[in-house]
Length: 125
Image 1 (cartoon, rainbow, N blue to C red):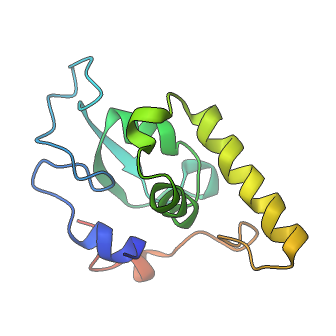
Image 2: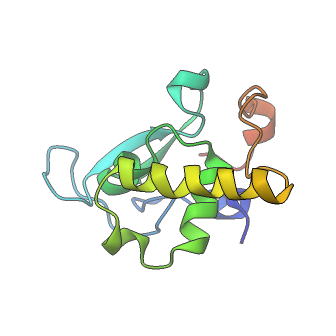
């Protein structure tokens, strides 16, 4: 399932990334506490935000959406096995190196500008 399809089904008090919910109040210390995540990281210009749980927001951190969904797709137990962004970033970095060495295209072209509001139109609440 592509990242645009996943995000189109978000909302209603559920995390747009892991679909867990209902989300708890943002004051909760739970991993399911409500937060808003910048689809494009703030470091890349920010922009649209989506509802997500604290755990997904912390794990995704500054990853490009395509890298984040690649990670979710290739690590089905990610929500239980990964504790912080550094662990996720190491896995994504290793995949970048592997793809470069194999001559494969990158997961996301990080040198390009972030996804525009027009590209996100209709898929982000």
